[in-house]
Image 1 (cartoon, rainbow, N blue to C red):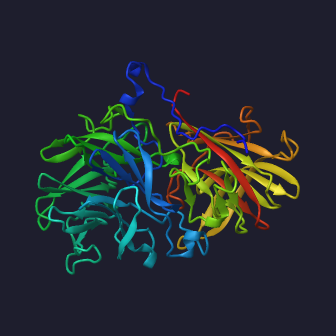
Image 2: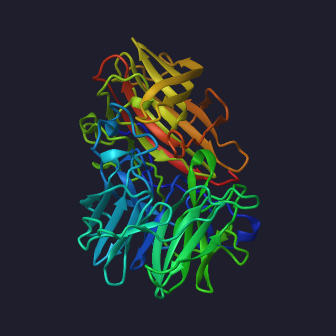
Image 3: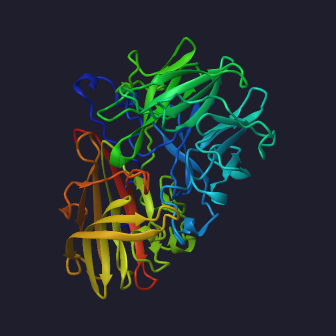
Length: 545
């Protein structure tokens, strides 16, 4: 069967250069943010000529994405540390949810020819156990090696003699047994005490060893006058000795506030780079790249003024352009690694093979709203601007079914196609979810329907109703993290619908992540219907487009 639309299954890029850069090939510049998308809590290592990065994705599955790059500019997702978490029905959107919880702050290491990852879901009890995973290569397959007590925002560290340690929380550490399956009795201790004005947690620990010295890097939240969020570093030559402290980065950047939390990594030639995240509102927490200057034995991040630079040359030139957000024509028999499900998917309710070249999303559970809908498929939105649209075949929807495209978050702007009897309507609505504090259960969803269009008689071919839904995001400074919504019947003539410049909100109390493109289909009356997604067409836009 022919595709409804020719969809390029590649990541699309548009780069607009300033006058001062016009004679520099775009591949020769890294513009900060290095990854202008939600990639928080990074850990970065280098193995040979490849850098590997892991980030937090909480309630999204598969989880703990591993990304790879040769040049610190072009990144692509190469695997996930786990496909799903199964300790509670909350991961299946039943008996609560794990919005804003799930996998946090994974630590990535390479030791004795194996990759190791340590993570602890931000949960209480058994759900909050620390997992240690291992794999022969970064792409996987990853297997669970051990489960330990909860370690908050922890890092795994192997000393030169192979002794394993965990550094976690605000200045705590312990030694692990050689098999990494237990804690050495009596080894738990604080290796530093925070200063009086550091009233917030010092967290996001990352530990390296360089020239015989141990370095622990942490984000420090300081509330004293004239002090800001910053990255601090503690160092020692003896793990049982005294640790010294220095501030290695205290910089605002790009019209946003101060940034911190991340790590430093070396190149094959011995140069060093720092990768730190910055909160940027609705798009989420983005990654910046800085040079590292070793001064008096301290890894100082930033340029000669200690500031994050606007642009940098990539570590290596001539690399192919890749991205962690991609278009997709769904012609593969396997789902692309650029996609993640909202919570654990229902495996028998989606298919890439039942209709060649289409993603089929089936209803599998009657639910009242998108926040409880199984098999919602997501990708990050990106700055400075981006646009993405889906092509949907609606011919097999059942009465009460709802499908569409959303700027998905605790506050969501949503394009919803509803089947009511034989009538199809398109709504643009604003949703606000209320979650309980403990179980993250959905208490209620406030919905404001801004505009409704009866689309039943508008399809060029009524027997094969196909619609295109588009979402544009604008995350430039002072542009209010705006999203705009459109629909079309031919992917050429677009009609705007609903709220103009809908504000994409970042709320750490609920989702604690940036807004996502979300493709969804759920039943409100009876299961058995489905929609076929022909493609997701995506483009990242520069600030001048």
